[in-house]
Length: 381
Image 1 (cartoon, rainbow, N blue to C red):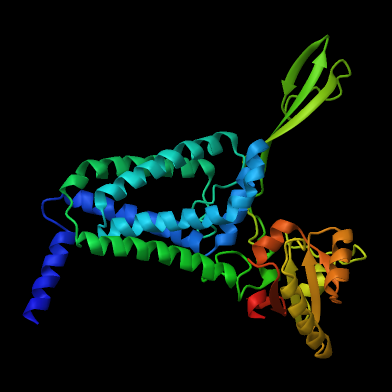
Image 2 (image 1 turned 135 degrees about the vertical axis):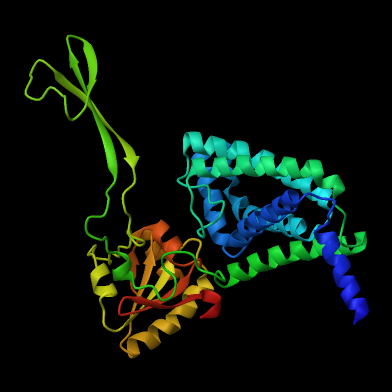
């Protein structure tokens, strides 16, 4: 018992040494928490990070569009690297090398986020996944603060003593990498351990689509361009030459000044094969409805689609509605039906919405009285 207390005391003395200023201990823990949080929320949603990488590649265009095939492994590497850095900071594993690794990481990410903030190729950087969505400029300022903290910590890192022997540190590094990769692979093969998206289990879709009265709306600044005697001039809504025929209208441009209130679910629409909007029928159905999500049937698992056929047959025998939702074209749908032999009806929904609803292709969602009651990856049907 005495030995245990003595070892425990020595452990905490090394973890919080008196020779290191309290401020630097706080900085170390802060860096650890930020990297762990950022890595964890990406690791539990590898497909979400994959979609974000693909958004970046498409936005940059040219050569980058050809890199879409590395989006998934890049997502796993990124989340595992952030977890490795964060956990190493927390447990003081090879603290000097960890500091250098964190600095190199931030030297790459900070200029990148500055470019994204200036050019706005994507609406948000995805640095904290769907758990915490912040603007591109806020992301850049956050990275500037982090890089300053990393530099400051690197200066003091020589005074930091290791908690463990080098052999234990090497084992810990391998364990951290294994944890990161395992979490990502598990979440990919099933579903994210924690669902931060608006379509999580328990959410009532109609209620989440409601916009409260007197909610703020998007505010725009509209500018009109008129021409007179070969001279072009810009006007606002207040002073444009209304009724003055000597001015000729040339163009109009609107700039978004501020975002208004946006309902958690604002883009959920289902159109059947006859191009009829059946959204209301599904979300107000007093019974249950299965939605089989296949945002791109060319990338969907045929095995999963065939497994869903058995669920479809049981559902219709039980009086439960069943629809397959996709963003693929009619020709692609018909080709898929001929190839797989499935008989369930296909409807159309926006691909981004489908990717948001469930991280699986195909994935199954059960809705009862407008409330999401269950979600499954096709491997878990």
